[in-house]
Image: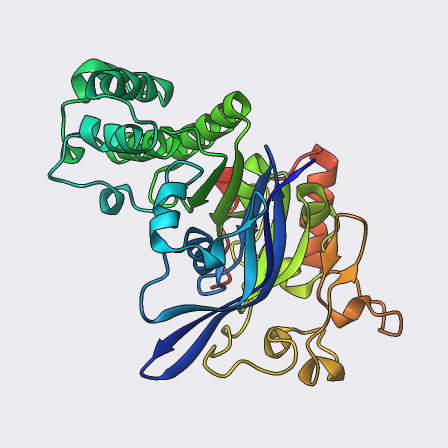
Length: 357
């Protein structure tokens, strides 16, 4: 498969009164055409900052890309001017944000907000843009699209507003769609509908998707590959099956172990002890070491490299070093892995919330 997006050694910092916050540290990944890559991790792990850097939507002057490249169709977005990025945003790369009400202008009718991108990027006249906007509303499952086109955001339910945001993001047939926790504020039923909608649209348009979430159940339903982030770094990356059936990093074990299951006889949820590190002064070794029951002495001194598990699976943990002691996942994680294997699939979105933050 040909690569659409290649992020290499991305470092993003925020200059604050408390010092420099190193939010993203050496992140590297790629996305193929037509593929869905999920990026998961606790709040503050750097997921959203990474995608906002791709869109060049970091707050100014605080947010700075200090190092790295973001290659999109062979061109480095890091060195694009704001005027050049305005031609790319919405047309080639679109983003669905977490809260639809903050994405929609409450003073503009829904139709005008969809038509805006069509008229700017597709050079459509108002009549053609209006017709296309109706088609898009129908595509995302909004009934009576002709009438709803002339209504304001407050006249839509939360789920319908998120469908409108999806319609706006898809208006210009983007090659890459970034979805930043688009279903977090929705109930389970609407959440499933939005996810199914995104999968259907991806099949029709062959667009690539970068899906940001803290919900492993969502990952199981939508992703081809998964990147696990912690303290501004990707600590494990692999296919969805590899992450669920054969996780290698203790942090990934923690995330999987904290997933509640419907058949679990115990009432207590397993949590990841401790808190993420202060990113104004990140540790020189493995940032997860203070929370890791399997940490080695070397974890305090050196950041582990990405060890190769397979051609598609890599993990940054010293436990994969040839001289490291052989450690198995804890019983709680093994139980879930066995459950996934016995059913042939990972759990659905209804029971996948992470409780480690």
